Length: 524
Image (cartoon, rainbow, N blue to C red; front, side):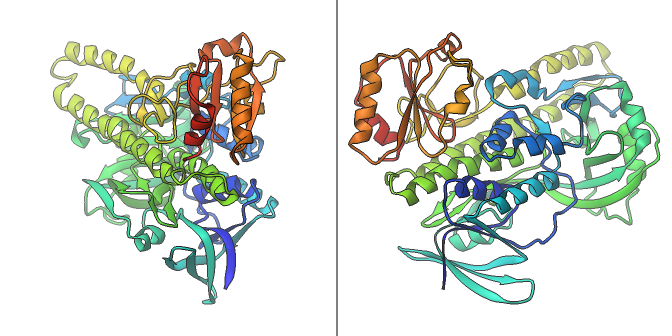
């Protein structure tokens, strides 16, 4: 039987990102991807600055920037309107640039198929990765020592491969999740949604009045809080549109051209490229691991396209899991490190679903039910202004963290997605970038295959204690002199940073045992 290190079921963006993160560490990876060609349906486009950091770590940041179909100078901002896209009531929405200072990369918009093409090419560059296109897993089994994946290719040829671990990145209908026996929880909102991809230069001309806006959502009473969501695929020609439709709507019995005209608030010429349907619901796996089987991305959680959380959350799954799998296979992970993947990532999605997606639907529904400009314009406009101010909190408050993680030292509170951004180095939170005394960026000194101890003016004896602890264990650590004027905003002089750029420990001085701190961060 074929023997591999890790088998990844599903070579979409999350599976490919995970493969790259592992492959760059020299881990032997096989990816089974059933599709030979990329799907040309635009989704997963609104990528965060944190995803930009992943692209930097995976060696694809420049290629992603060059491939974006909307110029950076145009802008990646959204707009919320009332009634129609061209309605008189509107405000800016989802301004990711408001949190740019806390990250080491820019956000960008690129359709999922564009990102996948670049990730596929990167996999081809790494000798430790094989992507077997046209192959799908048909069975997954495991015992105490190995996991076995049986697969079939497009020609009907079957085979089996044995691996140390298997990760299901195989979508919302995940075979790996099913055969691992992992149950899901569902929130069924009982809405049928359409996804339309169309071309229209006239619509581009109509929306020139809102320069720099790449996506638009309109709220109206009859949709009870669910959006009419329009977005650019490129600059000037191609668009996508999501909206609730009747449960019995089909391509043949529903007038989608009139529906779009009504949603926008004007008539314009269009050509349809795709019309499809999906059920609006949120699903969440009850756990992310069963023995040697893991799940990530849509296999672990899926939700409607509200706020651009989906693929970004999946990429963060990959970044969190990769270093822990590699640590285990390299022999320095403690017994709790692999379990910390689910302990950290599960509450983050639960919070994303409740504190952002469901909350937006609830609040929009309550607003359109209670306020109507035709009945009480003054009350409506006062509430609209209040909403315009409060919407800034969505981006500023989306800050996934592992404050309650079992492998974080000194974390306070529960892990989740809702937290204010801060430059302070806080256990369980993402490290913000700063310039060092030599003018370099601290992110250029963070290691991908080991912990990094940043000594930002710390006592030399404290840093030495960590160096001595490394000598007594197999846990890899590098120590970086990070003292600088900018680093003072971290408000900590000793900062232990994980390979995924999250803070495992932070303090001004060492008051505990360096062996214990390093050991807990590694899962001991």
